[in-house]
Length: 201
Length: 201
DNA sequence: ACCGTTTCTAGAGTATCACTCTAGAGTAAT
DNA sequence: ATTACTCTAGAGTGATACTCTAGAAACGGT
Image 1 (cartoon, each protein chain N blue to C red):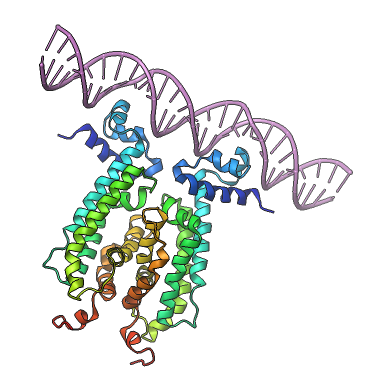
Image 2: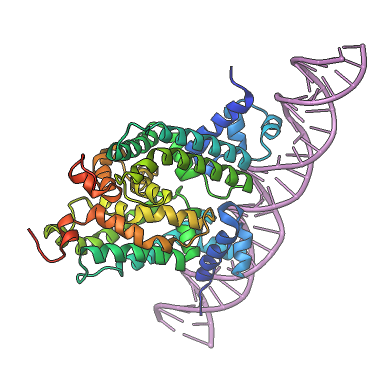
């Protein structure tokens, strides 16, 4: 049993994916969800508000996938590899959602949505830090801020993901996983740990 | 002396920056450019067409800035550093344009615009390859495809640029230049070249 | 069971906006 | 002067996001 509200959100995702943000009309969304005009505007004050809610919901699912990738048992290289694979895997296997998150929705959010986004970002950062901080302390990962670390892991992969999501490039971004991991490991893993995986200084 | 067409493009950029893509009305753009409705649709068949033209024009300026950053005289590390600095510098000093390119303009372009975009991308890649290929051949840069190389240079920087452009983060992305360069150098420059800058194998 | 309150559904109505259409002004070549 | 073309002008049109009013369903207290 799904609620009308959930139906509308799902319909929104489907229609946004099919028609893009501008192309998607409220009429198309509510007919796809079999909801009346009144219902639509009862649950969401505007098309933008539905879009914002959808954005935060999908962002949460994406973050959950990333958080699930690492735990305390991972060493530096393994963690880096898992984070990158998790990102690529989520984008490919949740193409619609990823397309919405990274291609379609593009900013212009209300302050409320922006605040929630910041909060979710912090929670993600916090989670990853629980794994990363000890490795930095032990000298296995090079010292850098959380955001710089993220930029090294996600940034390059994202170039390929965006190209794939927009249809500009047809190749599955997962094909780049190994080379992206190799580069990221050089960028953020202490070189001692690269040369000989057993001996600290 | 500016033409009505140029005025409309400039007005478009200004209004898109102020009001976002949806918020920007044709009326606002043409009144900002003091052009009549007839004029607007004489030059551009639609609001989207103006947006597409603007996109390609700004993409060209961005690429020109990147291409100007490297020449044959740069060694591996110097070239990497210059590319990253050029990207950060262009984004900050052309905030409006960068915001349009990376935040506002949605990907829903016509096939014509997409084709032109691909062509411009190739020309950029080609230019950078003229500098990069010899360094790869000499073993100063690690071997990887052009796109992977790009992803290492631009990807991480772009995380900071987007956060800044969207207003999510207030800090000037140029503050991250040194750490981003250091990471990128580890990622793409051959480690021989890092340890001792004079001796090949 | 009954009433009151809130939540949700319904769809006709409205304002706005992208875009069309018709007409005319400016300009240049012949 | 005539013709042809480019550009300007603004009234008109259709689509669409959103409003408004009213009623149906669900829920809660007595």
